[in-house]
Length: 85
Image (cartoon, rainbow, N blue to C red; front, side, top):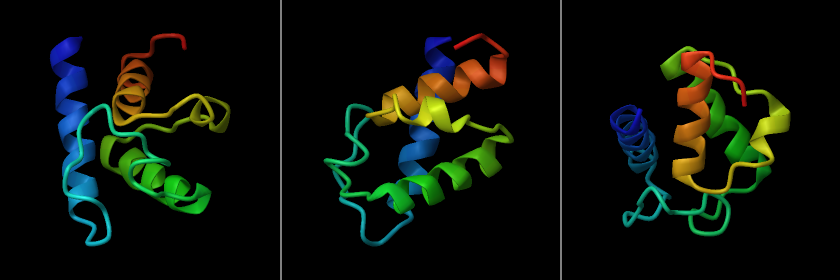
């Protein structure tokens, strides 16, 4: 599962780096709101992009627990695998 999480982290980072206003020094430990300066609308829009790319749907109640890129990658991988949260 660790390889899948790392691959998802990389996909998320690549998607973020495609945006011109996002810092270039992103890591899996980067905090989405604090480090990337995303407001709630930007977070929602970005999560929708990732959901479309990975063909998953992240429940809104789980979004509240996601702080870092790694948290997002772990959650998305659990959803894709059908693992209970």
